[in-house]
Image 1 (cartoon, rainbow, N blue to C red):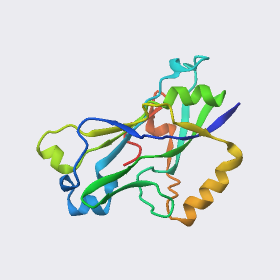
Image 2: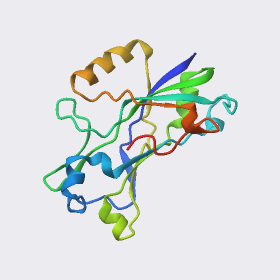
Image 3: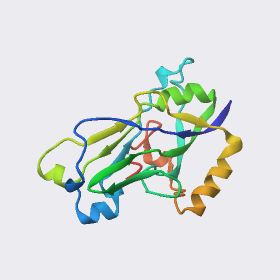
Length: 179
């Protein structure tokens, strides 16, 4: 049990109309992050041992989940006129107390990434929502975290952005913390 838990979200499925590559502007193709928003869904009552007293004090974005890397085969990109890949953000959570890692994972695994090119704003279309519908989101063992960070740094994918409790409302990070 620990009060720092690193989660790798695996958002391999989606909801809504999958965006065509033609929906993205040249600027959005160059930086897909301009179209993406991560929504953290924190449901402490979903844990086997209810964690309603647990507050997320800080979130550290280790990898934003959308920056593309061919070498690491991760992130999102537009290739051959199509959106390819799926978001896999890695986030370190600092909690108000130590909890079972899998219990905490169950509280956040329903988080999602919304992809909404500006063309969808103009036509009032809904975003495409990437989410983990199969329970692939996992806890990264603390003994592997430094190695993963080093690999991300080598590939210029490490974020390091910290969202402190000052940017959170009632212990839940602001919804648009990535993107």
